[in-house]
Structure formats: structure tokens, C-alpha cells
Image (cartoon, rainbow, N blue to C red):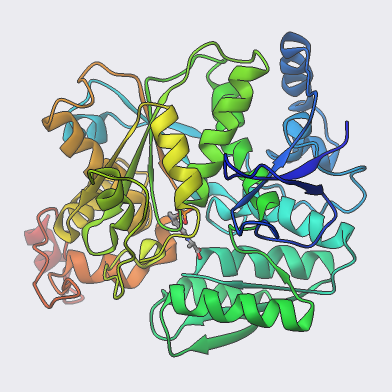
Length: 433
Ligand code: F0G
């Protein structure tokens, strides 16, 4: 079945070949998405094929993305695919986090178990496969850290040169270190994420470099499999709510598209509701969602949050995300720095751990249950997007009472856990025990 690119704008819906190197509709400038005309799958049969592949040792079947290749059929063949065993991320019940969030029960889908430690790997294996199919020799992205770490790994594994642009001084060392280690040429630009994205788009066009930001529709295809795998792991029982953090809103777009398609193809018979959580200092999507008119997103010119992964003021995928959240009868919430920090410590105390942006989910759940939007007995899956080790500096500062919000306000170590300095003396250490 041939894939196409289609303009997301309802008034345009122009179609283009899937091999055209475009990121926006050449006619109207709208976002693009992959589309599969006359798409039909036998849901019962495909579900059993997917389950059987889990027991197969072929690399593509071991991949938690390509195992589900029938749901992302944009390639003519799979020769261009490079896998480093992305996906395969666990569902983790977290009673302590449930209690904190005001729920009877809460399950985390932990994308931090991916090879480079974030959900970006699900999308990057797909984006890099498309880059290879198109014969691209160089790929680029602007990133708050995780996209760059992931792109560096997948491009290098595929023999393509990775070029990374990051806001100088505004990404965590864990993520920067990954980009360097995976061999990417890394440019630290004196500008914020939104400004650098505009810059990189010009450069990519001029220099024939393939852009792998989440505006790239094939990355979105890969990220759909986060939802497919989660439902497969739940034996296709659909939760009431899926909660995720929102930055550039690519993941929200991917989740919504996956759910729409799974419903249309007969894999599920109801839609879960999507709840997107933003950090208060970088919450343009929250403002849009709760505004009287949702026609236009007002960008936040100077976004601020310690959850640097979601420090984005002008999210590129907002039209898609708005459509998906609305279609799912979902909602958008925002949370303060203190709330993110405390929620993160709670996720840690469950023995799970995550990076700051991921913890926005639990902070958001706590607010949404308190407001009666999510019921205490609801079946909720929260997506933890990044690994705990992505930002160790934040963790150390929180537990030692040294963490400050961007406006200089101290963050209280509500669940702080100071290391204790002791002499080399068993008696004195015993006194602490
Ligand atoms: N959580 C983490 C850990 C992220 O790295 C990101 C995005 C998000 C949530 C938000 O996802 O953009 O799809 O809404 N990080 C990007 C990056 C922007 O460059 O790594 P989104």
C-alpha cells in the first residue's frame, strides 16, 4: 500500500509523494503527516503476529518499533532501517506515586528505558530510516537535549553524519555528553530553542541536510508505537487517561494519530483521553487550550523552566496537538517548578526515577485529580519520557536544598535526601544508624 504525505490543514489536505523532502505543505505551509490511502488491516490477525514477534530473535522483531511495522508502513522495504533495540519499555505500577497523585492506581510507561534514555528513540529509528531511504548523508536537529542524543546515536549507527544545534548553556550535561560521545558535530548556539529551529530550517534547506526535528512526519510515525506497545502490553485494554508532558508537542501529535488510526482500523473500540502537562514558565499550549478562541497560539518569547526538555515557547506541532487533545476530549494542565520537583522525588522514591520534564506528568495528575477532572478510580497511564540519569545535577541540588527556580525562588526539598558526611569510624557511623 503506497504511503503519501498529506497536509494536516483541513482546508488544504494537499497530497505529496512520500519521498519528497518537505517538512511543511508547499501550498499552504501547514504541517504534514504520513497517510495510507485505503488502509485496511485484519486487527485480530495482526495483533497475534505482533505478539508472536516478541519471541523471535530477528533484530527488527526485537525492536519495539519495527515489531509493529504494519502500523507505520511508510517504507517500501525495510533495508534502510537501523535498530538499536528501541522501544520495549516497561509498564511499571507505582502505588506511591498513585497515592501522591490522588489515584487508586497509576501505571508508568517508562520511555527512559530506551537505548539513549528517552522516547525520542522510537521516532528516531523511523526518521533515520527515511533519511537513508532518501540517500541523505547528513541529518540535523535543534534540541533541548534528548532529540540530539537520540539522533546522534541513530545517525552514527546508520553511517550518516549527525549535526546538532543546541541552546548554549541550556541543556543538561548528561544529554550534551551523549551527543559528543555518539560522535555528533555539536553547535552550541547563543539563542533559545525556538530561534535555533528557525535557523536550522534555513540551513537544512540551503545545504541539503535532512531535518530530524519532530516536524519530520516520519519521526511521528515511529513515536506512534509507544501507544501501540503500551496497548499490546495491556492486552488491548484501553486506559481512561494517558498523561504526558508537552514541549514541542510532537509526542502529543503522535499519540493522537496512533489512537485515531488504531480505532479506525478496529484495534480498539474506544479512545482514551489525553492530558498534556506543561511547565508554568513554558505553557503556550495550556494558554491556547483554555483561551476563548483557539485559532492562534501566542508564543512565549522567553520560556523558563528547570525542566529544560520542555523549555519551548513556540511549539511547532500545536495545530496537530490541539486537534488530537480535542478529539480525545482531553485536557491541558500546567504545573509549577516546586510541583515538578516534588513529583519527581516521589517517582524516585517508587524506585523508578525520571528526568524533570517527565515528572510534570505526576504533578499534573495531582492537580487534575484535585480538580475532579480525573477521577480517583480512573485507569491512568502516565508516560515518563526520560531516564533519571539525564539530569543528575538537578537531583543533587534538589536533595541538598540548593535548587532554585529560574526566577531565583528557592525550591524546597520537600522530599529531600541529603548525603551524610561521616568519619571513618564505625562507632560514629553506628550512631547515625
Ligand atoms: N519529555 C522529554 C524528556 C523531552 O525530551 C521532550 C522533548 C518532551 C518531554 C516533550 O516532548 O516536544 O514531543 O512535546 N524534547 C525535545 C528535544 C524538544 O529536543 O529533545 P514533545
